[in-house]
Length: 114
Length: 118
Image 1: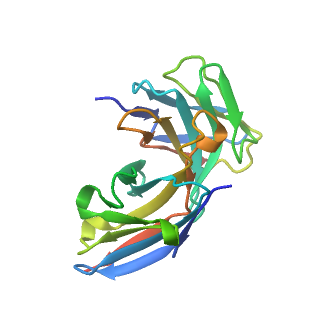
Image 2: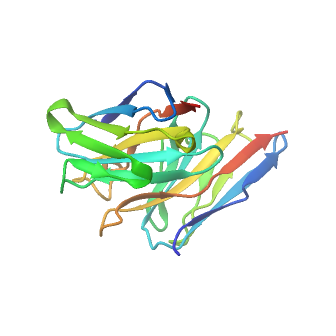
Protein backbone atom coordinates (compact mmCIF):
# COMPACT_ATOMS: atom_id res chain seq x y z
CA UNK A 1 0.00 0.00 0.00
CA UNK A 2 1.16 3.52 -0.73
CA UNK A 3 1.88 5.92 2.05
CA UNK A 4 4.30 8.22 3.79
CA UNK A 5 7.04 6.97 6.10
CA UNK A 6 8.64 9.24 8.68
CA UNK A 7 11.66 8.18 10.66
CA UNK A 8 12.66 8.03 13.37
CA UNK A 9 9.51 8.13 15.49
CA UNK A 10 11.43 9.60 18.44
CA UNK A 11 14.60 11.68 18.20
CA UNK A 12 16.74 13.31 20.86
CA UNK A 13 19.01 16.23 20.09
CA UNK A 14 21.73 17.78 22.15
CA UNK A 15 22.14 21.53 22.29
CA UNK A 16 24.00 22.85 19.24
CA UNK A 17 23.46 19.73 17.15
CA UNK A 18 21.89 19.47 13.71
CA UNK A 19 19.48 16.60 13.18
CA UNK A 20 17.71 15.36 10.06
CA UNK A 21 14.20 13.96 9.95
CA UNK A 22 13.38 11.60 7.13
CA UNK A 23 10.20 11.63 5.02
CA UNK A 24 9.62 9.21 2.15
CA UNK A 25 6.46 8.71 0.07
CA UNK A 26 5.51 6.17 -2.58
CA UNK A 27 2.26 7.82 -3.60
CA UNK A 28 3.75 9.54 -6.62
CA UNK A 29 2.62 12.89 -5.21
CA UNK A 30 4.29 15.99 -6.57
CA UNK A 31 3.93 18.18 -3.49
CA UNK A 32 5.36 17.57 -0.02
CA UNK A 33 5.16 19.54 3.21
CA UNK A 34 6.68 19.79 6.69
CA UNK A 35 4.63 20.95 9.66
CA UNK A 36 5.52 21.61 13.26
CA UNK A 37 2.95 20.92 15.95
CA UNK A 38 3.04 22.34 19.47
CA UNK A 39 0.27 21.92 22.06
CA UNK A 40 -2.59 24.32 21.39
CA UNK A 41 -1.01 25.83 18.26
CA UNK A 42 -2.34 23.59 15.54
CA UNK A 43 -0.14 22.88 12.52
CA UNK A 44 2.43 25.43 11.43
CA UNK A 45 3.97 25.14 7.98
CA UNK A 46 7.77 25.01 7.92
CA UNK A 47 8.61 24.31 4.26
CA UNK A 48 6.85 22.93 1.22
CA UNK A 49 7.88 21.68 -2.18
CA UNK A 50 5.62 21.58 -5.22
CA UNK A 51 8.16 19.90 -7.48
CA UNK A 52 11.57 18.24 -7.40
CA UNK A 53 14.52 20.63 -6.89
CA UNK A 54 12.25 23.42 -5.73
CA UNK A 55 10.94 24.35 -2.30
CA UNK A 56 9.43 27.35 -0.55
CA UNK A 57 9.54 28.70 2.98
CA UNK A 58 6.43 28.38 5.06
CA UNK A 59 5.43 30.44 8.08
CA UNK A 60 8.21 29.32 10.45
CA UNK A 61 11.20 28.36 8.28
CA UNK A 62 13.91 29.99 10.43
CA UNK A 63 16.30 27.41 11.85
CA UNK A 64 15.22 24.69 9.41
CA UNK A 65 16.45 23.53 6.01
CA UNK A 66 15.15 21.06 3.42
CA UNK A 67 16.10 19.45 0.14
CA UNK A 68 14.03 17.84 -2.62
CA UNK A 69 16.43 15.90 -4.82
CA UNK A 70 13.98 13.09 -5.48
CA UNK A 71 10.22 13.09 -5.85
CA UNK A 72 9.90 10.49 -3.11
CA UNK A 73 12.00 12.18 -0.46
CA UNK A 74 11.79 15.46 1.46
CA UNK A 75 14.17 15.43 4.46
CA UNK A 76 14.04 18.20 7.07
CA UNK A 77 17.15 19.35 8.93
CA UNK A 78 16.67 21.07 12.26
CA UNK A 79 19.74 23.23 12.69
CA UNK A 80 21.37 24.60 15.81
CA UNK A 81 19.86 27.97 14.87
CA UNK A 82 16.43 26.67 15.85
CA UNK A 83 16.29 27.73 19.48
CA UNK A 84 13.25 25.77 20.54
CA UNK A 85 13.13 22.61 18.43
CA UNK A 86 11.25 20.37 20.86
CA UNK A 87 8.00 19.56 19.04
CA UNK A 88 6.10 17.00 16.99
CA UNK A 89 6.97 17.15 13.29
CA UNK A 90 4.60 15.99 10.57
CA UNK A 91 5.35 15.37 6.92
CA UNK A 92 2.62 15.31 4.28
CA UNK A 93 2.24 14.94 0.55
CA UNK A 94 -0.60 15.98 -1.72
CA UNK A 95 -2.26 15.53 -5.04
CA UNK A 96 -5.18 17.42 -6.51
CA UNK A 97 -6.04 14.96 -9.29
CA UNK A 98 -8.17 11.84 -9.20
CA UNK A 99 -10.55 10.80 -6.48
CA UNK A 100 -7.90 10.60 -3.75
CA UNK A 101 -7.08 14.30 -3.89
CA UNK A 102 -5.94 16.01 -0.74
CA UNK A 103 -3.17 15.52 1.78
CA UNK A 104 -1.72 12.29 3.17
CA UNK A 105 0.23 12.51 6.42
CA UNK A 106 3.04 10.50 7.92
CA UNK A 107 2.92 9.27 11.51
CA UNK A 108 5.21 11.98 12.81
CA UNK A 109 8.57 12.39 14.55
CA UNK A 110 8.78 13.65 18.10
CA UNK A 111 11.97 15.65 18.61
CA UNK A 112 13.22 16.40 22.10
CA UNK A 113 16.21 18.51 23.10
CA UNK A 114 18.20 16.99 25.93
CA UNK B 1 -6.95 35.06 1.81
CA UNK B 2 -8.63 31.94 3.00
CA UNK B 3 -9.02 31.15 6.67
CA UNK B 4 -10.57 28.48 8.85
CA UNK B 5 -12.08 28.98 12.28
CA UNK B 6 -12.83 26.11 14.62
CA UNK B 7 -15.04 27.23 17.47
CA UNK B 8 -13.94 25.74 20.75
CA UNK B 9 -10.47 24.37 21.37
CA UNK B 10 -11.94 21.76 23.72
CA UNK B 11 -15.29 19.99 23.54
CA UNK B 12 -16.45 17.46 26.09
CA UNK B 13 -19.41 15.11 25.61
CA UNK B 14 -20.76 12.08 27.38
CA UNK B 15 -20.59 8.68 25.77
CA UNK B 16 -23.68 8.22 23.59
CA UNK B 17 -24.30 11.96 23.21
CA UNK B 18 -24.26 13.97 20.01
CA UNK B 19 -20.88 15.25 18.84
CA UNK B 20 -20.84 18.65 17.11
CA UNK B 21 -17.55 20.24 16.11
CA UNK B 22 -17.83 23.59 14.39
CA UNK B 23 -15.88 24.83 11.40
CA UNK B 24 -16.34 28.07 9.48
CA UNK B 25 -14.27 29.11 6.50
CA UNK B 26 -13.74 32.16 4.40
CA UNK B 27 -13.27 31.70 0.70
CA UNK B 28 -14.24 33.60 -2.41
CA UNK B 29 -15.21 30.43 -4.25
CA UNK B 30 -16.71 27.13 -3.11
CA UNK B 31 -13.66 25.51 -1.60
CA UNK B 32 -12.47 21.99 -1.01
CA UNK B 33 -13.11 21.19 2.65
CA UNK B 34 -11.67 18.45 4.82
CA UNK B 35 -11.89 17.06 8.33
CA UNK B 36 -8.93 15.19 9.80
CA UNK B 37 -8.58 13.32 13.09
CA UNK B 38 -5.39 12.96 15.11
CA UNK B 39 -4.84 10.49 17.93
CA UNK B 40 -1.99 11.15 20.41
CA UNK B 41 1.48 10.87 18.89
CA UNK B 42 0.10 9.98 15.47
CA UNK B 43 -0.31 11.70 12.14
CA UNK B 44 -3.53 13.15 10.78
CA UNK B 45 -6.05 10.75 9.25
CA UNK B 46 -8.68 11.86 6.76
CA UNK B 47 -12.21 11.62 8.17
CA UNK B 48 -14.10 13.04 5.21
CA UNK B 49 -13.95 15.64 2.46
CA UNK B 50 -16.42 17.82 0.60
CA UNK B 51 -16.38 17.17 -3.11
CA UNK B 52 -19.30 19.32 -4.30
CA UNK B 53 -21.21 16.18 -5.33
CA UNK B 54 -23.38 16.36 -2.21
CA UNK B 55 -23.69 18.83 0.63
CA UNK B 56 -23.94 16.08 3.25
CA UNK B 57 -20.74 14.10 3.36
CA UNK B 58 -20.35 10.81 5.19
CA UNK B 59 -16.98 9.79 6.52
CA UNK B 60 -15.35 7.05 8.51
CA UNK B 61 -16.27 6.03 12.06
CA UNK B 62 -19.87 7.31 11.73
CA UNK B 63 -18.95 10.96 11.26
CA UNK B 64 -20.59 13.24 8.75
CA UNK B 65 -20.41 16.91 7.82
CA UNK B 66 -22.75 19.26 6.03
CA UNK B 67 -21.57 21.98 3.69
CA UNK B 68 -23.68 25.13 4.07
CA UNK B 69 -22.60 27.75 1.59
CA UNK B 70 -24.90 30.45 3.00
CA UNK B 71 -23.32 30.02 6.43
CA UNK B 72 -19.79 29.25 5.13
CA UNK B 73 -19.77 26.31 7.49
CA UNK B 74 -18.71 22.67 7.43
CA UNK B 75 -19.60 21.37 10.88
CA UNK B 76 -18.71 17.80 11.87
CA UNK B 77 -21.27 15.64 13.64
CA UNK B 78 -21.72 12.15 15.01
CA UNK B 79 -25.04 11.05 16.51
CA UNK B 80 -23.58 9.00 19.35
CA UNK B 81 -20.11 9.50 20.80
CA UNK B 82 -17.88 6.57 21.63
CA UNK B 83 -14.90 6.56 23.95
CA UNK B 84 -12.66 5.83 20.97
CA UNK B 85 -13.68 9.17 19.39
CA UNK B 86 -11.54 11.05 21.92
CA UNK B 87 -8.93 12.77 19.75
CA UNK B 88 -8.10 16.11 18.17
CA UNK B 89 -10.02 17.13 15.06
CA UNK B 90 -8.82 19.55 12.38
CA UNK B 91 -10.86 21.29 9.71
CA UNK B 92 -9.01 22.40 6.56
CA UNK B 93 -9.82 24.35 3.39
CA UNK B 94 -8.21 24.75 0.00
CA UNK B 95 -9.04 26.84 -3.01
CA UNK B 96 -9.55 24.39 -5.89
CA UNK B 97 -8.59 27.00 -8.43
CA UNK B 98 -5.03 27.43 -7.25
CA UNK B 99 -3.29 24.10 -7.52
CA UNK B 100 0.41 24.22 -8.09
CA UNK B 101 0.92 27.40 -6.16
CA UNK B 102 1.02 28.34 -2.52
CA UNK B 103 -2.67 29.20 -2.68
CA UNK B 104 -3.38 25.53 -3.28
CA UNK B 105 -1.97 24.59 0.10
CA UNK B 106 -4.43 23.42 2.71
CA UNK B 107 -5.20 25.95 5.43
CA UNK B 108 -5.83 24.23 8.78
CA UNK B 109 -7.89 25.34 11.71
CA UNK B 110 -6.26 25.28 15.13
CA UNK B 111 -7.98 22.05 16.08
CA UNK B 112 -10.64 20.96 18.57
CA UNK B 113 -9.79 18.41 21.21
CA UNK B 114 -12.74 16.11 21.87
CA UNK B 115 -13.09 14.41 25.25
CA UNK B 116 -15.66 11.67 25.82
CA UNK B 117 -16.84 11.02 29.36
CA UNK B 118 -18.05 7.57 30.36
